Image (tube, rainbow, N blue to C red; front, side, top):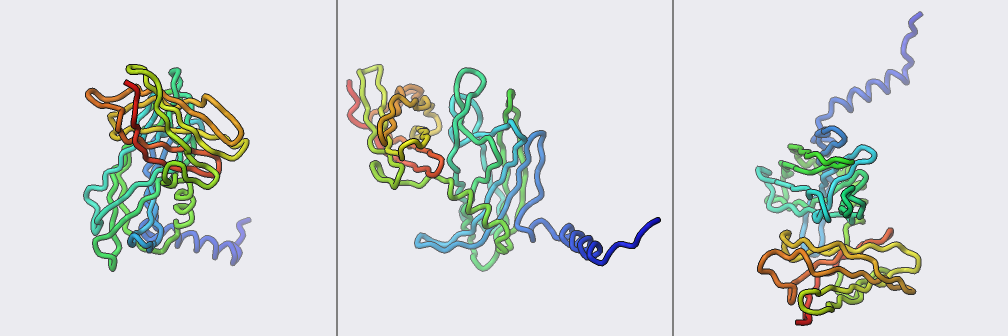
Length: 286
């Protein structure tokens, strides 16, 4: 025998129906653009005012199936970094993409890739042309997802800001994993103490010393001044009390480039902290 729905069930069903009827933009998130083993969407936060200016928080969220991964801006020995194309956005002066701290993992071919094994939000800082009106972001996202094999993925997303801030907490959590830019030798708990080139002409390498809490796992990544540089991943070569020593060979430079005087970006990552140091490589032996 059929029973009449209870008042509580009716209210719950009505509320669910109302939520389903809310446009995606009003929820500060687009619908998921799905691919086999992955999905992507845009999420929006609230307005932020700092000493450097005013911007709106947003994010590109990628959801991955268990066992799959995607890549950092430097993918390591293999892989393809995601690209973000905001052409066609409305009332948008600038968009800055922030990159949460990555991890390294075997690429299945004897090397290592750099990226993300779990769901990830890339925080965005959106500067509108007119702060009085909400901007509309158009994003063409291209990225790669890999398990044993890699496949390309893409998404075309559009989101108009409502400034309701419903996704603010998730975006803030992602921002906490973005490495903080600090000077060489400066850090609170985690610090890149020194970057020392050594070796002879034709076989130069760089030694990097990192201060870190005792027992904390630390990893280090290095990038050249342009994406054409393909430097090896630094290897951990020494562990002493409060210090980790990494080294890498100065290989993978583009034709005509010189390491002496080049500006490199170092990203040090521990479970509770991540920092970024930009410094010049000088006085290489000749």
